[in-house]
Image 1: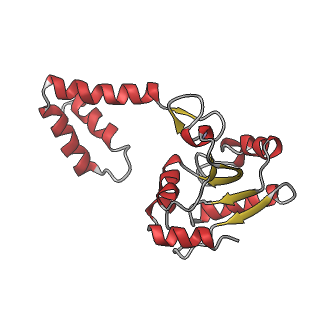
Image 2 (image 1 turned 90 degrees about the horizontal axis):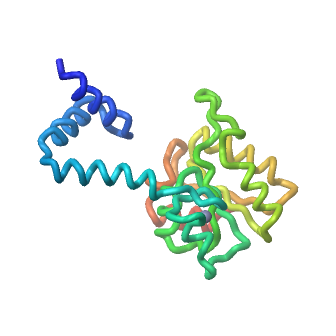
Image 3 (image 1 turned 30 degrees about the vertical axis):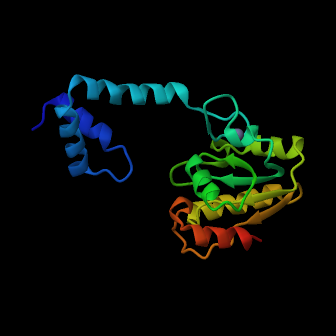
Length: 194
Ligand SMILES: [Zn+2]
């Protein structure tokens, strides 16, 4: 019922999390109504984001240069690494102002159904860091989901003889997401890690 090009845009918007058919249609109509300037601004933002945002060579966080702001920050505790599944979890942890160590982003969690195995995650470089850097504690801060749990167990196993490994003590239900967790719960989870 829509012209093909218009429908292509709807399908593109549907790839975004939480966007269904109706919302995607609304977005597409909005774009259709934009003037040239609005359109170019949006187009540039997407193009330049891809060119200007990289992943930190060391920890996998988003970064403008080779290394991210946390890896470059001399005031951080370089003996601790907090392992998260996505760069957006770092923002959640930073917001509670409890943790001052470094990070390591896995870019996902083990998910057998989707074929995501340990090899496809940013784990090899974590092991390398533990070997090369003077790390005293690794904090596993993955989502309290089945996949997050599987990944934490896997990491605990391979890190067992290498470094002290702790986990956030979640008071949040299984199936929750770290970045949606309120600050107080996250703070308690950090303080109570074991
Ligand atoms: Zn980094």
